Image (cartoon, rainbow, N blue to C red; front, side, top):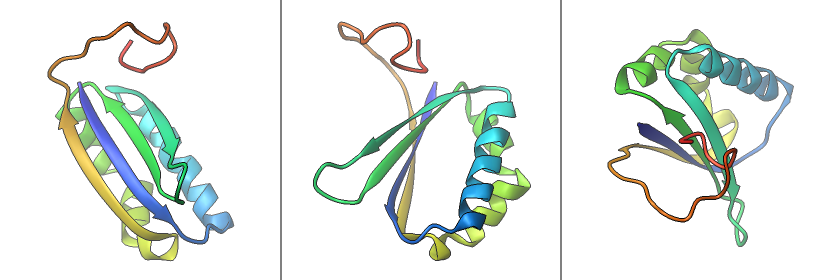
Length: 106
C-alpha cells in the first residue's frame, strides 16, 4: 500500500478549477489500484492535507499520465499558493481501529 500526501496552501479557486478537480477525482477512481482518499484541514491555518491510497507504485504511475492530472500540475500556480507531494510506502499499521469505513486501508 502507498500513500500520496498532497499538502497544499489554497489560493483562489474558480469554476475551471472545480471542473478539473472533479475530472481528476473521477480519473483516480477509475484507475485500477486506487483505494480512496481522506482530507484534513489544519485547525490553525488554511493548510490542507489530502491523502490518496494506492495499492502499488504502478497504480500511481498509471494515474500520473492522466491528461487532466498533467494539465492541473502545469497550472498549479493559478489555484495554490504552495504545494508539496510525498509518496510513502505503508510498512506496518496497527491500533484499535476506527471502524470499517474509517480508512481506505480497510
